[in-house]
Length: 312
Ligand SMILES: Nc1ncnc2c1ncn2[C@@H]1O[C@H](COP(=O)(O)OP(=O)(O)O)[C@@H](O)[C@H]1O
Ligand SMILES: O=P(O)(O)OC[C@H]1O[C@](O)(COP(=O)(O)O)[C@@H](O)[C@@H]1O
Image (cartoon, rainbow, N blue to C red; front, side, top):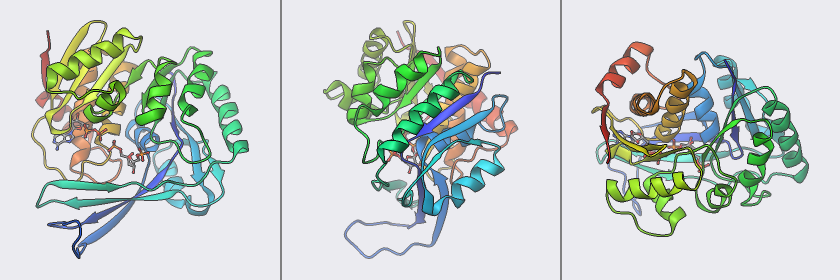
């Protein structure tokens, strides 16, 4: 089976703080702290590891705090092609308030990427493009790179005929749209920002997703948090509603959804299979901290509990 390569330009150590009743502007006390390897592409790599496709992670890691990432790569048998850059990868703070059911993300900027490292990344991707069929470009773009970073990477992979998934936001997503990724997964807020207009309910979101599909993105997935996600491909639109699950943290749910969709696609699944597996992976990670999935029998149970509805 073809290999999957995930690209993380801005890796992160996710520091999850358990703060019941968290209140901005007040003194808050954390009951516990957990640190896990994160960053969108690294999460997708972790969620896909252990499956039939070999998984490679590439991107940038700050040279001063690589241990948490190297441990993940070793434990999950993810091939580590990440380039080391001076400094430390950022720590992103995730404040989880289980009482109030909220997660507050404070994402830091990350180390500046030297030009030599950027060029080495493009060379590495060219090399990996010859050997792997699926690429995931995900997350924010750190200092030192331009908003065109993804728009520059996509043609390098296209030359090799790779399937390119993009999960980004803001200007990097807008620039990359011209390079026509094969799949995108914005959330509703990112989609509204991309189109420059507010989006109402599910029908509005579906119409917007259809517009992007008409621009040449084969598979458009729009995630809607607890309201599930909309999947659009070749004129078909589906809504997938996750089953009710216990939520420890929503961090990484979007990345799990990307991984589940790709796992289904790699197995030859149709749009409904992608929606079902993507939603089950997202629901599965909600009760766990870090890029973890429950065991296969529980994933099967979650898949059976996903409600799929066709949208006309
Ligand atoms: N609170 C929740 N309850 C149930 N499912 C959720 C919840 N939050 C997220 N999900 C699932 O995870 C998917 C991705 O979450 P979302 O928050 O939309 O992504 P992102 O983190 O990329 O913004 C959703 O489409 C949904 O299936
Ligand atoms: O690169 P960005 O956009 O700052 O996002 C990085 C953060 O996103 C995550 O990958 C989680 O993303 P999702 O919740 O969207 O799946 C965290 O691990 C990380 O801290």
